[in-house]
Image 1 (cartoon, rainbow, N blue to C red):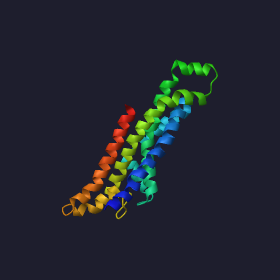
Image 2: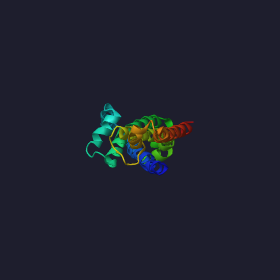
Image 3: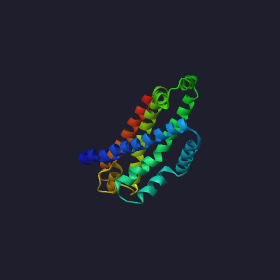
Image 4: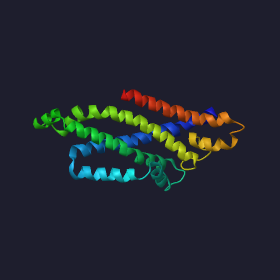
Length: 203
């Protein structure tokens, strides 16, 4: 049981971190691009973000996973597609506020390029928020993957993933309740740890 729980950490936690990273990098870059460029690129990206956010996150993940049932790659791509909008909005709104500050206007009047503004003004303000949001996104990815596996979408028994393990052990809840509680407890502790880390970053 402990060996399966340890193996499940690779899918439930390790790949969830990769999904959050796959959402954070393009979401942050696109948010900074929208704030820096403005105009039609910003409107196009905002419209795309609104279209993605119009779909419930779980429904979007299920739709992507439907192309290859039982495979891991579409599952984590779907999670990343559902999570990137938050990184985009946070980075874009923060960057837009920073770009309106007098010191940024002074840097532009001095002829300093977008690279200098990004490195000296935007990134120091955006990075702490993105780090906090990344911890929350990783927790969301863990619970999303586990919930989908529990209902039979994504990982399926006997794959050692925490959500699929709960499905596999559910018929034996009366005879071995501890075996069923262990993967649920690991999900709870993992998400709690990520949220506490996010709270520390925010503080």
